[in-house]
Length: 53
Image 1: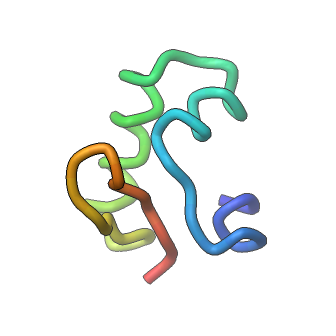
Image 2 (image 1 turned 90 degrees about the vertical axis):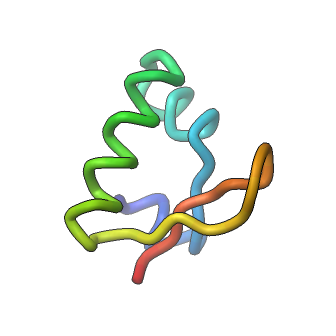
């Protein structure tokens, strides 16, 4: 969350690297935060990123 606040956006792969986890786990966590309204998903395909609402 702090990374998104500082940089403005995050990708699934970067999230996985920062959390030292798999891309699947990072995607699951980002999806949960998106569904909760904390962040929003933007872009298409490989260009998908997440940003604060």
